[in-house]
Length: 335
Image (cartoon, rainbow, N blue to C red; front, side, top):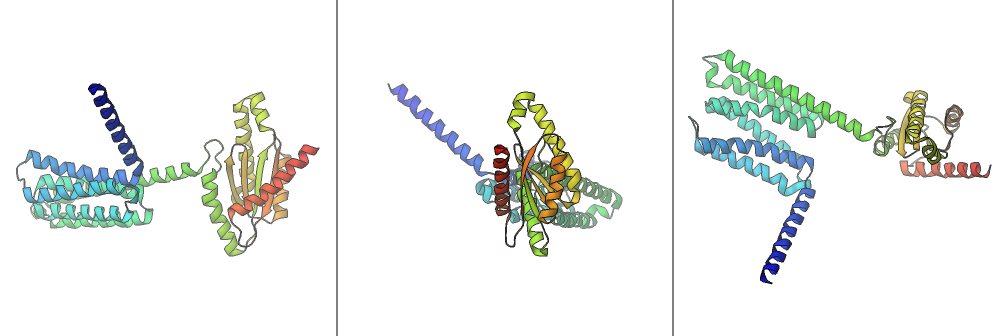
């Protein structure tokens, strides 16, 4: 009986631990995790120095940098989703101070190499999580710090080319890492707002770009018409010919609309077989365009339209177009 109670307590304890771990993981963001990993990696470097104690080892500065980076690694995990971007920039500034100190004044080859090796880490971090303009300014500042430190390096007087070449390599590699990170971020941002099947905007893209288009039209008092499209009997098509046939219809239709709309508007797949078109045109002109597209369609679809009114937002505009779409479907059902 006592053994069973002990097992029950152990099970309850393990369950509580798992629950806490799940909550801790859910509390984190990609930004907080990567911020912790960046500082944690550098803390590990100094921890190894404390353990190995290589020739020229200086315990006080190494201990200071180890404790500093350990704190910088724990803070993002503690704050989680509340970890502010400004704090990440402060850590980057702290890393640049470390680079300057070790390259310019420490006179220790091992520390100089470690300091320069952190530059690609800074580059990836800034490229992933900060805007292109801010990231580039900060990378230029990082490069300036490294170059100035290289000029002040004690070995520069005896062998200037060796130090300059080493710093130049670090700068070039960091620049490559930053631009590569920007490409990856940009690609992920594009994929996040595009429907992978049709290449049209997805619902998230519709909200992001649609709100911007509407705000611009309101400022300029320019005409803007929203079209809501819903394919007729699309489920029957999928059931009869298969989902591949249904997908082909959606892809072909989206391509036709894209060619017709061009730069005059945007196309979004709001869900399933439902699409939204935003056209820079008055209501009647938009009706002509959509009427021609409907006549050329390989599979029939119904649509509703609404022209933007003063002070109106995306949700209100979609709701009015939906009302007309509903009336069009009712009229078709009565035929």
